[in-house]
Length: 325
Ligand code: BYC
Image 1: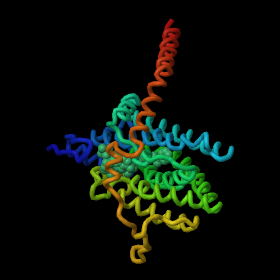
Image 2 (image 1 turned 180 degrees about the vertical axis):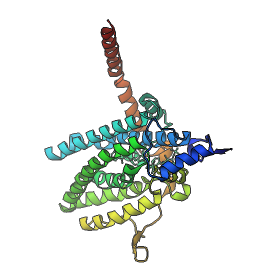
Image 3 (image 1 turned 90 degrees about the vertical axis):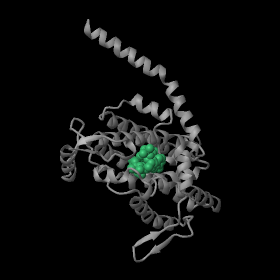
Image 4 (image 1 turned 180 degrees about the horizontal axis):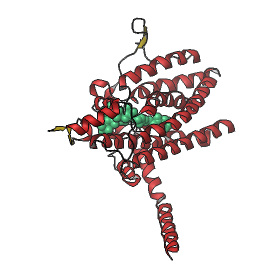
């Protein structure tokens, strides 16, 4: 007997029930799935989609911060920002490599980013208007990334889980670097503190959106949790992030821009106000403040780099021909 695999947004696949049950038993037993193992087509496609989008997010995520490298206020700030942006390039490369183990090429993934088929994190479609935004991105965007990515170190797919271990270590440095910038501003002149507060006001909601739509609208979560690709739902991670971040804002003397934010004694958690999901979907569909600029910058980088790819291929062909002589 055959059943429809529960593949949701990635399309349907038809697999033998016995095969699906055997695969699920491996997952339930916490065994890692490796590239040469048999896997449901839907599992493979979900990972290609998620890892590919994650890789694109790292690469596009270099742009808003890269914008401030030449304007960092001191040599020390410039050096750490440069290192952080470089790390993000590295994260993108590990992740493209992890996705390639699933039979997709980096060229294919890049084409999908450039033609708008593949998504990347909504957060990078917002501009960086002040130096404080570099602090806020490290503190909140990397903070949200860590909350989302620590559980991915236990993802059932081996190459993704292993890539995430190193990425999370580096993200932890990024988060501290951002927190320290915000702390310096918050303890500085009234103008500097106001700059930090203004940045927090702009970024708070977009950061909460990073965790994805509410569980009730998340088409992939149920299956991804069952396959242990995701260990927590979008709403669970968003709540953990709010609970961890509110005390940090208090410590900084900054105000989270949410009049509904209150401690819920019964839940031992913070209640928070509604999120503007219409804005989220607008941004995800390509109509955020910076979507066009971000994709145009990546397209230019791809076109400008054509000669490097061609030269590398010509060099490899020459070496191969020499070896064959
Ligand atoms: N932005 O069913 P759902 C970083 C899409 S890098 C855009 O819940 P899923 C950093 C989603 O793709 C941060 N699109 O999806 C880098 C789906 O559409 P498709 C990136 C989003 O996959 C540099 C639809 O909405 N982190 O932190 O189960 C510097 C329905 O959603 C977003 C990762 O990629 C969004 N925010 O859950 C600093 C982590 N949210 O694909 C920092 C790995 C949802 O069906 N990814 N969508 O057409 C994940 O953990 C999951 O993919 C998500 C979404 C939680 C993001």
